[in-house]
Image (cartoon, rainbow, N blue to C red; front, side, top):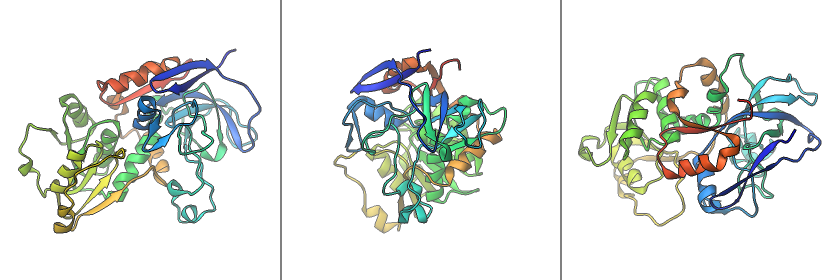
Length: 342
């Protein structure tokens, strides 16, 4: 039987090829893709063959958000057919960052489908995946794989909420209602925060309200003075510099701005004087640590309506079409890739 693998061979060019078979690497288990989802990082690689200043050196399989079924446990305490969430962070476990519990900052970390790991590791947009057993988290029976693929991006959103100190009863603004912003909204609402969502697109704000936002704002259709100094925490999830400046204006004195967006390197005019005048704390948020387990448990709980956050589904072999649809900007929520047979 021919197995499918997708490869990004150049900007805006995704090919489907036959996947090569081989022995299972030591410490790994063999898996069959259940469901994967597209990330903004994948989109940057698709559009530019680069992301955040990191240039791909060769063709690579994208994808770092997925869940899969165990095919061969390879001697580990997993069983064939079991559904597992895939943690893409392959940290060393011994560097200073790892010893502090900061796996996301591991100095020799490997990450699939990314130019940050050289040689590049193929990502999850393929039918058969060999992945470290320690990075496979088995889930409760009955978990929907279309929901479980949200575990990795939800972990990133939760990390941003944790860095921002989001807790019950707080007023939280999320700027940008793309997939990550929507997950931040859902995560903050699940914690009991009062969430306001802001986006330029009315359709995205509509989905944000379904995700748990109490209030939705459309850029250019309200007086920014109404939100000035109102929020305990602002999560910036758009990657747009004007939204960054809105965050600095909207956060209260001594409040916190958590940067979840994948801001690309470029010149920018930022209202830094507000950081001083209001004693704003600005925190970066990169990937996740313990939040992966938190995210899986949130999926298992059924507390989040992931169906409302799903924009479209495509079969694995149409990964190129799915990325093109994401690039077109008309999808509100996550685009999913279904493994063969899903």
